Amino acid sequence: MTGIDRSDVQALILVPYKRPISRHLLFSIDRAEGARRFVAALLPHITFGTSDDETKPLLNLSMTWQGLLKLGAFDALGGPHAAEQAFPWHFKERPDPDSLRIAGPSSPETWWNGNFDGDDIHLILHVYANADAEIEARTAAVRAAAAENGLTELLPTRTDEAITGRALTGRQLHFGYQDGISHPDVNWDDLLDRPDLLPKGMFVIDEWLEEHQSFPRDPPFRNFVRNGSYMAFVWIYQDVATFRRFLRETGPVLRPDLSSAAAQEWLAAKLMGRWRSGAPLAATPEVDDQDRAMENDFSYGQDKIGTRCPFAAHIRIVNGRDQPLNAANRAMFPGGFPRVLRRGTPYGAELKGEDDDGMDRGVVGMFLCANLNQQFYSLTRWMGKTDFSDVYTDTRGQDPLTGERAFPHSSSEFEIPMANGIPLKLRGLPQFIRLQGVALCLLPSASTLRDLARN
Image (tube, rainbow, N blue to C red; front, side, top):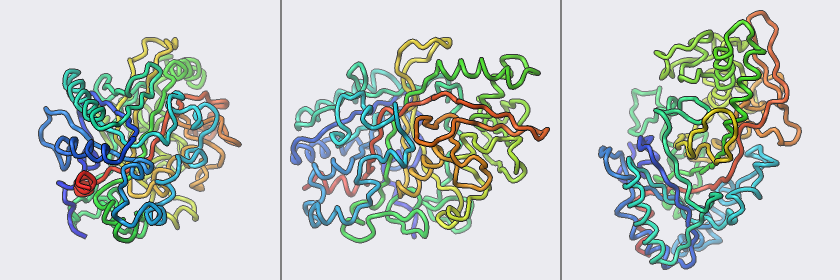
């Protein structure tokens, strides 16, 4: 393996963006010829490599399986049937409710506010900017190119608008937690003296690893996906009012020895595995320490019974670090927990108080990897059913923040181990989030986009 050619890779894969405003424009293709002209028009503006210019807007382009077919992407590569045989099911098929561990209000039939069918999503343009004027100007240019080339914009919100993300205070999300702390460190340059870095083949397609195998495996389709990444685009509603009421009503009951405010923060930390400042419970379990807010160098080896950080806390499920997997999952993931690159921003206005104002708010999440099934879907399965490690006594348990309580046979309990040996058990956890849409995409390389634009 050799170091990655950054000029061929969309920058969204390589670096987390720091622009405070984002917009995600969904399009449906009518004619392949028009879609190719659209790609050609946008190509000079798509951001590749690692951008050093922190002032200009950024633009990235992702495509669904249906979009690639509509675009005629495989016509010169053996045709759609040959592509069908080469590409993996977890990219080609609709998002899998069982792997997502969803049911009820998060079911696919409720997605996109019923404004269109998920198969109608063919292209997504991801726009990032520092100011409203910049995002509006770039949005107008994209929409003009789409209209000129016969693409139809799909408007998913209840107000018939594009999904627009906007940073709150600092790195804060709507539930009050700080985001953007833990990002995998990737060995993009194949440095032999850096075993601490994750191999780039976990995140860009075509690096054939023993685990996290990427597909297609053979030319010409392997060449088509090279230097690209699969992406799960996930639109998540967060019920902030319910979450705040839950903390206020439950925290003081669990910790009557603390003030109400301190008890609420303690409970919020136990649910996440970090204090809302970002400080990890594994490092500072009793009190928040904002000086440790960005700390990421910790493990759970000294917390084998979960008294510092509960086993089912969100960050301990999605990145258990040195926590052992069970035998079946150790065989599948010999290197430990599967990882994804997380990108995204909050959307919607900040809620004042704990009375629901009826406004839509939450998180736009983009999860990048080389194998959607082994990486993204494994994590969603584990968030919805804690049966992946022998440390869990409740194998029907869920991530307390992201779990879908309506999923069949799931448990809505959350156990907080205590130093006295008597755990606190929360029963009947409320539903805090709802999926509003999931699209499985490919972020193609510059080489592939140039080929698509030429044909």
